[in-house]
Image (tube, rainbow, N blue to C red; front, side, top):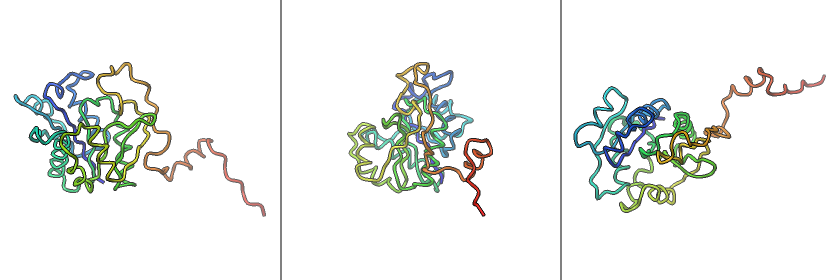
Length: 224
């Protein structure tokens, strides 16, 4: 499975805002790449070329926004189409508002892993049951995404999409999926990690390793 990251910033200023010592979109690109997303598209205005310059040498491609009248959903669709143009085998895309800068790379990895076992479902990361971002949209649902009216704000775009296609919440124990940059990093709740495997299964070697470590009781031997 090839899953893209589509990072969406409404302004160049927001894209370049210093975030833990980096321009915000550069930090997000590094997080997405570390988590296994590829291709990575950053969509933002860039009147003087500063956003493209800050992405130089990274794994990301910069794209200019769709026309304003296309609305938030138009920006999402445009970003996905740019990702498809980069890698034709892209099977899903993480729609990622740039303000959600505290998402951990483990969350990206977990969503991609879950997509591998559930490739037709929109996956929404959650924190204590609250849906957040980035949302993983399978490419097969791109036409349904295009059908969402352009006057919907991003959360409402997702709600409209999941009313039409299969979706599920994936609890990942990452406060960054619901707390954006309006919450200072130092004030984030602690990262907890997923309570169960995001893909809905354990790796085959898990039980063997646990038993070797003394965490599981060995099965009783059959009696003669």
